[in-house]
Each structure stands twice: as C-alpha cells, then as structure tokens.
Image 1 (cartoon, rainbow, N blue to C red):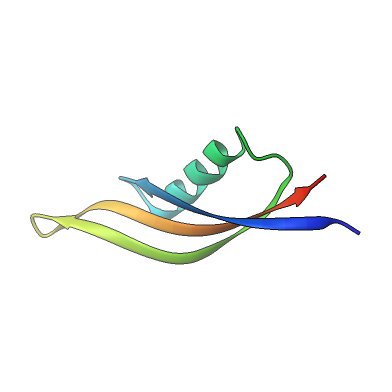
Image 2 (cartoon, rainbow, N blue to C red):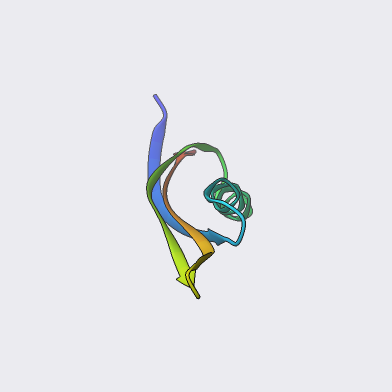
Amino acid sequence: MAIMKVIEILANSEKSWEEATKKAIKQASKSVKNIRSAFVQSQSVVVNNDEVAEFRVNLKVTFEVK
C-alpha cells in the first residue's frame, strides 16, 4: 500500500493557466519526488489596464511518500 501526501502550490504565467500548471509541476519536481497527480483547485487572473496580465493557479499536488 502506497502512502500519499498532498501539498498546495501556487504558480503564475503571462500566457495561460496551462503554462502556469506546467511550471508549477516542473518546479515542484525539483524538490518533491514521486509526483502522481495534480488537482487545479482554483484559477484567477491579474488585470492591468483592462487586459489580462497574468494567469494564476492554485494546485493540490499528490505524491508518494517512500
């Protein structure tokens, strides 16, 4: 039986929510091993001068504890 742990990660991108999610997983994988899944808990944007300036995601990342 595998033991799993969940952490919360916040990330941003100037291009898209998808890119923010990919950046979060890539950065997290540098210190967290055995990542199994990620759940996008929320998405938001920053607006400057009536335009979207930044996409933000809040992820729940699940990984196996060995």
